[in-house]
Length: 233
Image 1 (cartoon, rainbow, N blue to C red):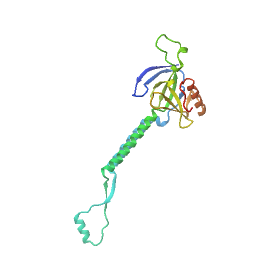
Image 2 (cartoon, helix red, strand yellow):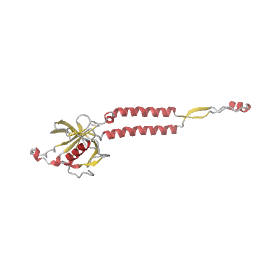
Image 3 (tube, one colour):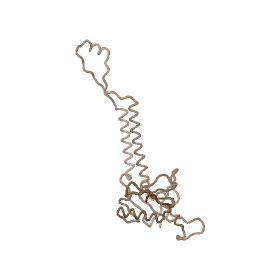
Image 4 (spheres, rainbow, N blue to C red):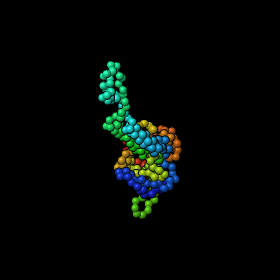
């Protein structure tokens, strides 16, 4: 049995963030997020430090070696001296457009890395719970009379803290194949993006199972409540 509050806050185009107040029954799926998602903010801090250092070094110190310019008196002296003096070389900063171009590339790489990390982290499922449907307004109904297609899915990702997550109607959701047998993709009609369910070291209904058993149990439990046709499953 589970209970939850209403919407907490909403991002444009995304499902509202809600809170699961109390949960007695284990979630359908649970997994400890991988290390990179738990340390994402630290990795981004390192990314900012490296990007800032790289762009600063490039702008202030990226130089090239060119022949040193000689003055008029030095040219006259070299003409009088029959022995050809070796050409002196010196280091000078590269043109500003070259340094600015490389700095822009380094900055773009750093921003892309941080954005990709945060984006994947926000879609990597750590917990998925199927909640009972909400009764329609009016006279109270018993749980047996609540329509099954009114059930909802409560998803918590590595980006959600404590008991917060997104809540979506299961009737609008479906499953798709992931990159391999250890991954299932969950999608919902009307919601942007999709969610990754990684089955390695996961718990299904509180029980740790082998990869294949976890996969088959998850799909079976989902299909018991889902109403849309699951694609490629």
